[in-house]
Image (cartoon, rainbow, N blue to C red; front, side):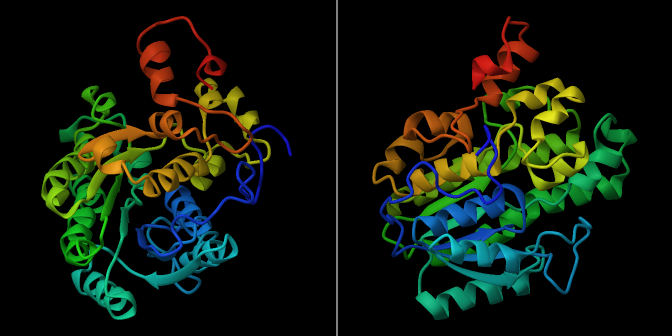
Length: 324
């Protein structure tokens, strides 16, 4: 296996580890690709039953326009990893569809233990009409769509799934976003994007207060510079030769696979002290990796947010290798 490359992402760190989430029921909302897919697979690898949702199926393509990743494939990967993957096509802006999803989980298991809100699907908008533009230069329809995809979908899903989640003996609500409370003190280039990526942090903060009496945990998490399927396509590389993209974008040297955050979150989900550690907080993949001792595919432990804060924005001498 080459450094940081492993097409199927097997658990090379703990191939014989136990299954700490074997009795847990999880929903990963937005599990078609990227971090959402990896999160679903790693929860499954830890033994969980994982409902995976999204808009792209083998019969239907969402506005993202990618046909190469589907929720059915994600569910199959979850099962192959040792869990039970269940694909449920769901547009999380459609309240009736989300209610039907929650009702199905209720009928099947009468509870939900882990809710991961990884809903987004706005990359096509950020690339074409969001980044590099003032708020008044941004097409209003595109800006509002970013807020629908990045905020409204999260609120709908949380509102309808939380009554099932609080039946768990240890509810875990995870908001996946871009950035932490600390890093997002820096403006995120465009007003609509800034709002969309800060809102999940506040959702986790607020739900942390509401879940306290149930022994629950709410946390916002973020990957670093993510080697998602879409990002690899953007640079014209694959996971096997991703380092070739560094010639186009030097900062890509700090990039991480989707499985880095996923391994860390699976460890958090199995942590009996997670509420005391994390409730109401936000954390990066690098933050979680340090606490739980996990590493990315290939064995590195990147901290992309520290690299950008210190070197890219702060002017400190350093290289990506110093932060891996």
